[in-house]
Image (cartoon, rainbow, N blue to C red):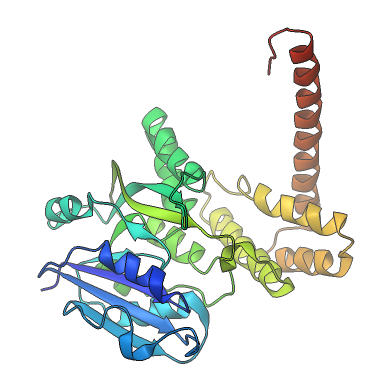
Length: 318
C-alpha cells in the first residue's frame, strides 16, 4: 500500500514545477501526481514535461481548464496513499521532508500541521508571506485550544499538512472549482472532521512570492468568487457554533472598503447580496466595515503621534 501521495496542480510554469519536483525525495512509499491544467503549448514543451523522467510520478493532462481546484480533485481521484500532501507548482519542499516522511508513516492523527517558510521565487530572499500562517503555530504554543481552532478552521491552505486520505474519501471532501480560494472549504472541512491533530514546529514547505502569480491579480469574477467562498465559510462557522465565526471576515471588509473607494458600487452591492444569500445581513457586513474603518483611523492616528514623538526624541508608545 502506498503511504504518501503528493498532488501538484500546474499551469504554464514548467521550470518552477521542475524545481518543486526536485525537492521531493524519491522513495518506494511515495507517489507524485502532477495534474496539468490545460497549459499553453507555446509555454510548455509537453515532450519534455517535468516528471516524465521520474518513475514515481504520474502526469495527468486535464484539458478542461477549470483551475487548480479541479486539478487537485483529479489528483485525489488517482491518489493511493494513506496520506495526502499538496504543493503548488511554484513552491517547493524543505530538506526535512524526508525525515518527516520517515517519522509519520504510522502516525495515528488525522492531520499533522507543519510550519512553512517563504522566499522570493526569483531571488530567494525572505518574504513575509508565511507570517500569518506561522502565527497560528505561535498561538498554539500560547493557547493550545485557540491555536488548534485556528489551524483547523482558519489556516485555509492545503499545503504544509499531512492529511489522512480516509477522511477525505469517506466525507466526500473536494476542492471548490472557483477562480480564487478554491482550497478554503477543503481546508476547514478536513479540519472539522479530523478527530485528532498533531502540530509539528518544523517547516516542511516553502511558499514563494511571484509578482505575476494569479493570487495577486484580481478580476471582478475573482472578487465575487471570494465573497461567495467566504460567505459559505461563515455560514458553516455559524451553523456549527464555532468561536471563529465572523471574526475573520475583516479581510473581506477591507476588500469591500476598497470597492467603495474605487467607486465600484455595483460590484460592492453584488458582494453584499452574496452574503445575504447565506444569511449574513447587510447590517452585519456594514458593522464589520465600520470596525475596520475605525481600526484604520486609530492606526493612522497612532502613526502620526509616534512620528512626532520620534522627532522630539521621545519613545513612541502603542
